[in-house]
Length: 197
Image (cartoon, rainbow, N blue to C red):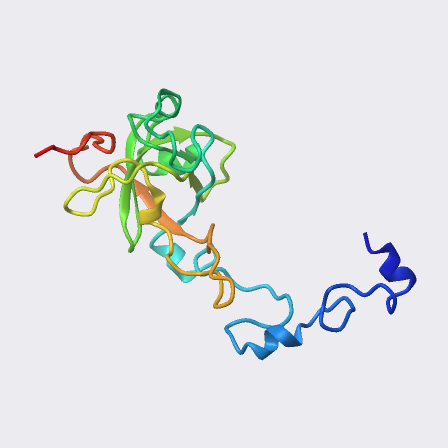
C-alpha cells in the first residue's frame, strides 16, 4: 500500500500535513480538546478493574443482534423466535448465574445506577465469568416506574461521546448487576398498538 511512498517519500507523500507518517498530530493537538495528539491507552469509564465493579460486578457487552437489523424487524417472527420469555436474551456464564440463583430461561433484572431492564437468561460457557451480553435493538418498553420490560440495554449504558472530537459511541464500557426480578414480571407491551381515540 505504501510502496511508492517508501521508494520516494518526497515524490509520493501520504495525505497528512507533513506528507509523512505522523505519530503525533500537531493539528489534533491544536484543537485543545480532551485527548492527546498521539495514540494512548485510556482506562475505560467502566470495566471490571474499576472501583464501581464492587457494586456492579458484571461487564455488559452490547453487540449487534443476529435476528434483526438494529431494532428493525424486532416484531417479526424470526426475531421473536430468539427471545427468552418474550424478552431479549442475556448470555451469562453458568457460574455467575448459579451464584445469583438464576437458571436458564429465567426472567432476570439487569441494573445499575442508570437504569434497569428485564431479560431472559441464557447460560453458556462461551461467556467469560464476570461478563454478560445483551444484543441491542429490543423495542423500548418502559413501565411508569422506569423498569424497561423488554431487554433494551440502552437504559443501562453510558450516554457520553467517545471524545470531544469524535462524539462516537463509547461502547463496551458498562457495569451491571443481574438478579431475579424484585416484583411480579410484567408483560411485554412493546408491540401493542396504541389506543385509538
